[in-house]
Image 1 (cartoon, helix red, strand yellow):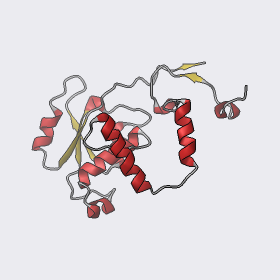
Image 2 (cartoon, one colour):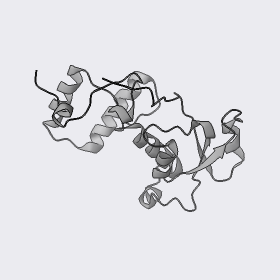
Image 3 (tube, one colour):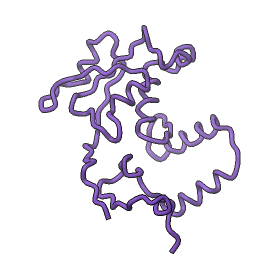
Image 4 (cartoon, helix red, strand yellow):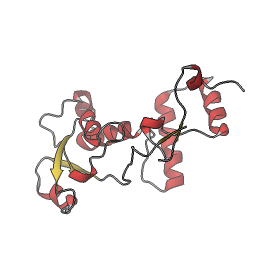
Length: 171
């Protein structure tokens, strides 16, 4: 059996008992995904058109109003924050990551600032957002209500799945 690239580099194999974890290589992909990736990598395409088409496909399957595919969770958070701050205004987009004078506060409960390889707040800052700490870890207020009375609030972020990065097993 031919060793995989990680074995060739002398890296230890781990058993991922956590799910999709950035610090464990995110996830493995099915053979048909690898084949589709190889086919896609063998040709050129206008990226704007690809982004538009893939967003349409994801929206059709999920029922979402709009969709944008990113390479990772951090990119998704950063893009969502920047989009909420700029509202798609090209002049504002050109200023990013400087959001001075724009409504750039992001309300997130303290306990939702999990570290998935980096804290959620790092991705918020990459999108030019400023984290407004809300509540306590054990007794959060209604974060959405806080955004209503904060003049510069633009977005409320909620971490959905608690991450447990310490539960991976070496093989």
